[in-house]
Structure formats: structure tokens, C-alpha cells
Length: 113
Length: 112
Image: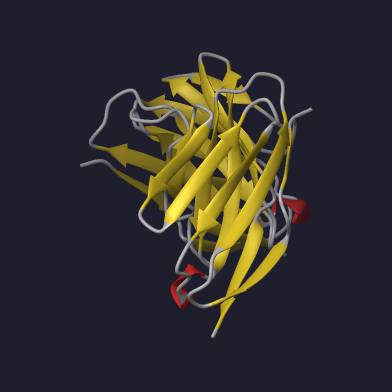
């Protein structure tokens, strides 16, 4: 069966520090992968998605970047965090049964101070 | 731009039926999904409508009308554990793939 994991689960970072969130998927090959951000009490904002190694589409210009160095690995990064980067970051892969079905990881809660 | 509108909060009584509406304005549209998210957790997939009509999965049903750019999620026989946020999401074309654009969510509170 397919599984998705992301880490770290929680982190507190100072403004101006770098960020790296990792996501890996097991049990499937060439998955479509997504990074979303959710501010407290808000909806999910699509940040990046990837259809394959080295292929990244950005939806919102921002302080963040994404990379896909391996087929089942998706990384979200920042060189210098801003206060507004705080939020709940969710990695997801798209299932093959339904176009509209995403499987989400456990999430990474980032607080920038 | 792409937008989905849904009520911010709904309160319903245990055992009752509740309907959460979603209207959308998008360029390009493949279908409408619904997700459930409990506080502190990740969203989980509930249903997907690619065609007009009603899809039923246990106590949950989802409806889509493409001509009205409208859908809804129907929850029957409400239980306390159904208290959560519910998101509609439109499946849209993207570069080489599909992408989901989410509404802001409806917080459902089930009361005894």
C-alpha cells in the first residue's frame, strides 16, 4: 500500500533562518506531488506541484522554493524565513483512481518568531 | 482567478442531516472534491464528482451541477465525531497534471 510521510512534524524557527521540509512517498512510482500551506483557521493554498523529477510548478510567488531530487521525494525550502511563512504545511500525492483525490501527509507545523 | 465559496460555519444536532454548499468560479474544471479535516490533523478525502448528479458513500453524499457551478456535501445521521472542517476543492488543469484549488472550509459543529 502507498504511504506518505513528511518531517519534521513541528518546528519553531527565527525570522531569517533557513527552512527545509521533506516529504517521501512509498508504494507508488512517478507520483504527482503537491505542497500546500494552511494558515490558522484558513483554507489550503497550493504552493508547488511536481509531475516528475526536477519538474516544479509554482502557483504563488513567495519566499519559498521546492525541489524534487528523486522520484518519491519532494522538498520545500526557504533561504530566509519571514513571519508570514508560519503555518501548517502539507505534502500530498494524487491517487490514480480519482482526479480529485489527494492523499496528505501528517503535516509540518511551522512557527516563525 | 479561481474561487470557491462555502459557508464558514454550520451547526447541527446529532442525528440530523446537514448540507454544506459550494459554488465555484473557475477557468477549466474537471470535477469537485470534498475533504474532511479534524482539528490539528491533515485533510482526508471524502468524495469526488466528475459528472452531474449524486454520489453516495455511506452516510455522506455529494452532488454536482456543472451548469450551476454548484455542489454540496450532505451528511446524514450526524454523529459527534463528524465535528470537523469540510472543504470543497475544484480539480483544475495544470502544467502536465491536475491541481486542486480549495475553498476556505466550513466548520461543522455537531451538538447533542
